[in-house]
Image (cartoon, rainbow, N blue to C red; front, side, top):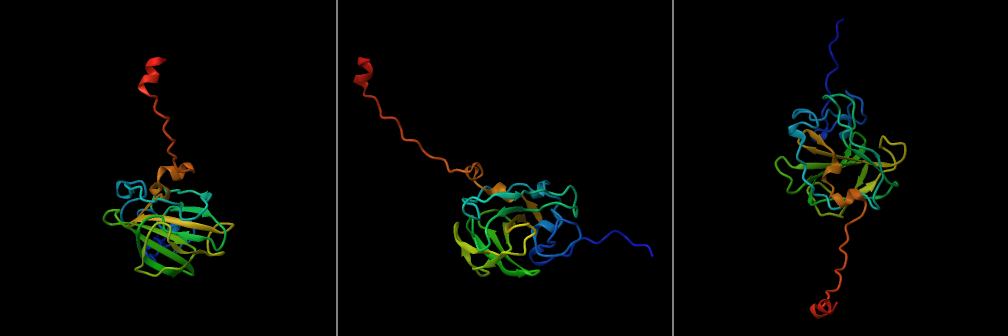
Length: 207
């Protein structure tokens, strides 16, 4: 019997599919579906243009990035369509920008919270957080710092507990670190130094 090429991954809720980085798997996460499916691969014009809207990391203190964003070379190829952030099980997962919860609940056996970010164009950006035990409901409005849920001890593809953080505009995957304010990537917020006291004109003349 002659067989053709394997079919593309099945779409799950919100267009999320695939819990692993291998093409053709089916499940809930951002890192297993073809980047840019329908809109072109990540890095194409359709996938560009994520505004800097995040004023904080989704975990505190600043988490270690245990695996970065690795866009696949072609649709359905292996890659990593998000970033993995190290944290302890039970850590609070927080909103990084204003938005609206469009999903909070299990997908493929793991907890997923998806937030549609306000003011990010049409179609809007969506952030995916997993595996998370939700403490919000669909339709809730969130502000930076609001708790979305707690990191679950199992359900990630990391060796130790980690948060998979993904960013999409419609079906195009983007690097979630690209929406973080620059000072957050440098590791410290900028500080304004005090101005030196003004020297009176008479003192300058005397010198």
